[in-house]
Image (cartoon, rainbow over the protein chains, first blue to last red):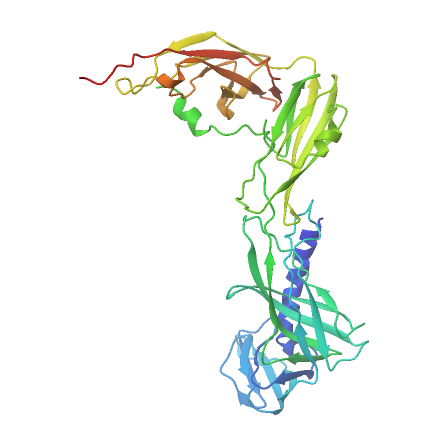
Length: 229
Length: 224
């Protein structure tokens, strides 16, 4: 079982977590999120047995009846995002809630450093390739706190995948490796955008109004013919 | 109808097929091996060769080469060697390509042209189909053959795969020799692949050959 396979399996698992990154709803009751004014956040819930969903923000019913709801926070204050599922025979499930604090500035901010061009992953000769590296800067956090950064990969405007990177802050400027195993045998460089969708520090999830992002250039590996004679 | 159309359609450089191609060579000979880029990368590429096994006697020299072609010297039979190569550009490495070499005293497969030579008229405006060598029969020894590769005047190798294994074939090389190319030209069979997948690779000077003698057509002046 090679690294690529392991990474793929991990991505499948993390795709759920990455969704949770933009939607705390399916976590424990009354989870905490702090959002900057102007941020648009997509919330998502999970589970089984629901045919439709009921969403409200502090009592204001939202139009979405699917398992996702996008909301733009424009007013400073404290709010609660609530959702429950409704079965096909009209039975309501339990409500899940997320407390959201909306402020003009976030107590913990995050910036993302430039990403150097990388080699693509190649299982035999480039087994550590394909993973972008960036230095993150947490402002307002404290050394020793835990963090998890949720991000999405875009190819131009097209969403590709979601993932997260986590650890403990031994410094406020950790260098992190995005475990992506990008491959590229096209013969030309390709570019992907890494866009941070939210980040959690010491259990509190933050969503900035402007999402940090960086592009990464992925070189192509040279592909050769079979040996000829 | 000649079989040239089929042959032409599948004519390619001769590749050691698959990731672990089995190549059989004569002891104490040498041969060039090479790879080509297939994905059009434009960055400078270096190649990392890894030759190993008692069957290859110049491994150190091969391993020092960063070009896409190496000359491999084979040892005494029976022995084996492995040849692996990958390209690197921008510090990024590609897939391995590997060939397994069996050094033998006698190649499993051999071939003989039914006719040692033929003579053809050159291609001219009044003979647009000239210059094309006629099909010639090749008889194989050593078992049923599934494919061969050949060169014309040591040019790019062309491979032919047979739909069914056979002990002889009609080789119709597509040529269009002109008056300027009058003289002797040589078809060389450089390898033969059998049903088992083993490829017998002839060393230089030992290949079965067939000579195409291109005659000279008269050249006359303009009418005056």
